[in-house]
Amino acid sequence: MARYVFITGGVVSSLGKGLASAALGALLQARGYTVRLRKLDPYLNVDPGTMSPTQHGEVFVTDDGAETDLDLGHYERFTGIPASKKDNITTGRIYQDIIAKERRGDYLGGTVQVIPHVTDAIKHFVRDGNEAFDFVLVEIGGTVGDIEGLPFFEAIRQLGNDLPRGDAIYIHLTLLPWIPSAGELKTKPTQHSVKELRSIGIQPDILLCRCDRPIPPEERRKLGLFCNVRESAVIEARDVDTIYEVPEAYHREGLDTEVLRAFGIEPQAAPDLTRWREVTRRVRQPEGEVTIAIVGKYTGLKDAYKSLYEALVHGGVANTVKVNVDWIESEIFESADPAPYLEHVHGILVPGGFGQRGAEGKIRAATFARERKVPYFGICFGMQMAVIEAARSLAGVSEANSTEFGPTPEPIVGLMTEWVRGNALESRHAEGDLGGTMRLGAYDARLRQGSKVAEIYGSNDISERHRHRYEVNTDYRERLEEKGLVFSGMSPDGLLPEIVEYADHPWFVGVQFHPELKSRPFEPHPLFASFVEAALAQSRLV
Ligand code: GLN
Image 1 (cartoon, rainbow, N blue to C red):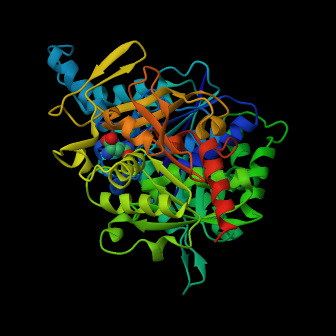
Image 2 (image 1 turned 180 degrees about the vertical axis):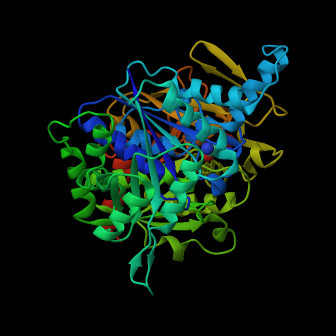
Image 3 (image 1 turned 30 degrees about the horizontal axis):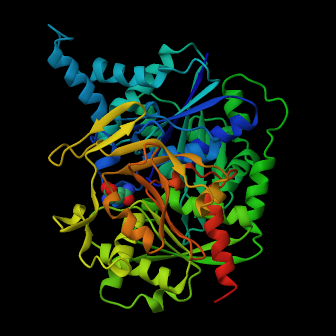
């Protein structure tokens, strides 16, 4: 029977609830328990797929093709367990289901209400399919007191009574701000936040307190007393210099011990944190460094490229080097020469993206990388732009473009209207809905024997996660291959280009999928490990 840990947040947003949940998951795993992590998002979008990454950060895609919250990326990276569409739900999705049922007549004669219909749907989602797990960690998005979060808080409150006594606990993550003029860490915002939580019927069992310095005994006593929590359950969550240190840091402060005790379990041996120590050591004591330019268009918000950044860190871990990132707005290259921005970097990465703004700048970055023989990694949109670049500069197709930006006489990249998933044909048309209709999730690809990517993967068959509506047009394949751009990865039916590479370049790879989504600190993705290795070789040249 699964035990439930509900994780809520207070005081301010962005305290790292997702990371805290992922770290607790990793600690319980390191003690030999099986865990599952799930996220409840109170916003009204059915999923984050239609939101700009500058609003809500990256959209994390699961193997089974769901567009989910970026916290699921933390869960995967920390526990190594692939997330699924069943691990994230939003208010929008819940209402969509309920309203569809209402129209069908399932509630005939009844009034459909937040309590019990919405709360029941949330509870059903939370409890569904957990038989095989020792612990289910459920993170509630937003902060306590948000109007849209209320049904979720009510649902997890009810679950405290629905579940057998002692099978659910509540952790509240808060902030203890340091006030320099008073020279004190302040507990009042946390007291207010807990008061708010208690007013809706939830008494936290554990307080996880974000702070930038140690919590003095007096403040700890106050927190315990005023928040009705035992002092040992006030856990200091101090800032750390790498996120991969978080599990160990929380363990040192007693988080996993307190969680087990809250369930009446007396902890036995200490958790085995060897692999976390090794990752942290490599991050802390690199033997060199490289600089990678990320030429993108959502560079204002780091969360927009969360998995990408972490995958580069993992590539660094694989090579025991530090990866510095230069974030460059690609639009700059539409009026300025890229050289001064790119001459000193050891690798250029053009990530996924949507829309025309900044596209020409990305193409110029690809030209620079190709001509100057700087390692280039094009991901999804970054691959598409590299192929357009090759068509224009090498194959003489001067009007080469993507139909994503409007009608073009030379559609090097075009709208995908049909493709095969397993044994089924998926089809879309230009006027269809935009939400949830891309080529999404894991697809197999076959790699060309003897290609660079086959060597990097150590295999000719791979599976990677996709999220795109357009594809490279194979009508141009021959002309491009003649000029040296090898189509080294294709869909199993041979119709969709998955990877391109130049044989006569130290490292120039474009992939139609998102390898960053599958990279983990303990298993750095081979493409990222290899790209950072190539950047390291480049650093010895410049
Ligand atoms: N906009 C492009 C497409 O839809 C690329 C998408 C992406 O980079 N994820 O095909």
